[in-house]
Image (cartoon, rainbow, N blue to C red; front, top):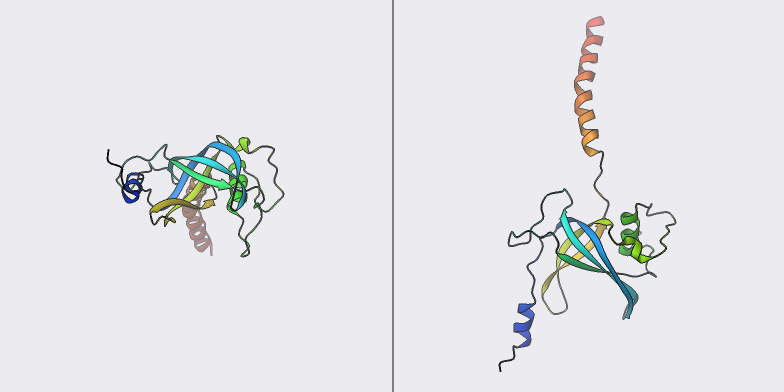
Length: 173
């Protein structure tokens, strides 16, 4: 019987990476809280839906990545702000997935309320403790503006009207 080396096992468990990009994710599971070196934490399982802009997401080998799982550990006692004033990732997860104002008092009865919610995140590639390059959630980001197209069409529609009214003013003088 041949038993693979640690290096061989590590290579077998290496996943095809997602390219660094903003993604739309769906929260599919909130696992039981566990104690680790950083304190009490709850692991959330998130599934890739698509790129944030709505385009079909692909991994680095150009295979569709819809349904690909990512993991994030949220910490109930780290719902505040970092020293530089940016909100913690856990605070962002709750605020952005529930539509609450990130700077105001928020309410969440149970972590399971987040299951099925959509969240947007910047995914990066980072080397882990074993020296492998892996995907990580760098930060949770605001959802795309829904009225962006409406705003752009109004600007385009108003531009000719403004030019016409300027020309009329010039003619009247």
